Length: 280
Length: 280
Image 1 (cartoon, each protein chain N blue to C red):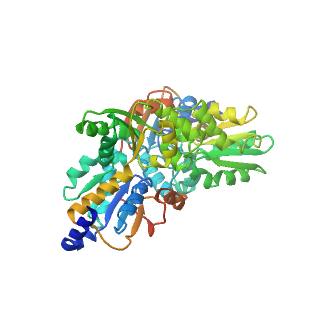
Image 2 (image 1 turned 60 degrees about the horizontal axis):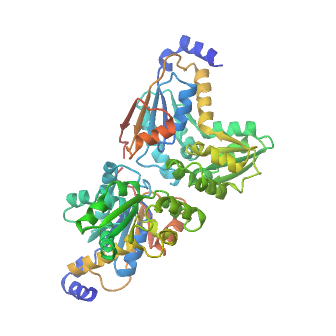
Image 3 (image 1 turned 180 degrees about the horizontal axis):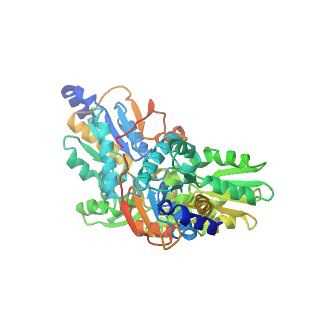
């Protein structure tokens, strides 16, 4: 599909194709989605906004999350983007319909649906687990989206300590393993696939996988959303074809040790990192 | 001193005394300071602001912390307060001089100095430990304040996972104990007193104490700042004498399960909890 789309793109809409993709997250964790986008769409220019001044979103109320998400989109729209990727699972869960209703002209892709699709495709006996922040899990949005797609059994669990563990780089060993047991023992043996519904969780893949056992497929939503973005751009003829795209990172706060943090999630050094103030 | 101050107060400045005390923190943790204030100054009206929409501050940059702290003070000033208590250790460490320079007419008391004073008073062999957020420890402000007071040896350690552990209510047992060992083993046997330089840490007292051993005095800065507030108000003749003061809580976000969270830190139910928007 990629090549058909690319040829369509070059014929039909080169200027559209040259516009950047906008990606945002509550903080730096969303760079795991950028990493996947860079892998599957290497020619695309990417503008990333991390709202590090107000991170995390996942412990906050729906009303506040919606307000912050709007401000994030308003910032990215200045760059004449062709697509928004909401790399934040919390926003994808509680605010994406709100954003789509407000910005009707703008294609907005969240991490929730691509993850759900993959889980439904691979859950052989129909039992799916979902882990995420408190706001993500309490939104029940995953459950609704999964049930729409068939007669699945869904087990959900918020895992709030996984985020600070990942940010501390404490991803393997006794402490994360005990924390993983505390959260996941109730899901063990009861699901075939587990949606890692938070951008930080892929860093804990090894530990989560050991606790869940070898038969459980872990779904990295960053990977799924990148696949979905390529599919969407291909269908529209908006794929960029050649060269290596730029990555510009904007943060609302430049936290201590930000370079190390960025590298941990992104796996490369971006072209530029700039501080920006949103309208607050 | 209390009674002298009180009689002065009633003679000299009843209207001053009737003004409320303003307290702020990055989130709900600062209610541990309010709990102590309510204990030692039961007649005082208290206005509390928790910036829950942007919590935590401790992982953010000095510049951003200063900007947020100014907005917090601007909000509290609307209530004609007689004293500001900065219940946030991060703000007390990186922004208090900035605030004092900007708001010269306003007495501002932070949690850092009272904690340092108590540590210096009780450190028998002159060895003091300090734990706090990354921003607090990297500010080196405790070290400077302690060295001003004498020839002490100071050992510092950021303990970022203590905050999410306390917020999850995971304060005793194997997981917090392992985390405490990870952070504190390098301080064990090397300090006589340990400043708990973060409002969340008193919730982990039992675990921290077990790891540090019985000879180490743990300093609860919320307790020290309340003592200091009473001292200051007494000296000025601003102490309120009678009745039970009101406590009004303002939050920039009403997070899920906020009532439970508030109770965990405050130990009582406040008169009112309202959502407020700062100028952002």
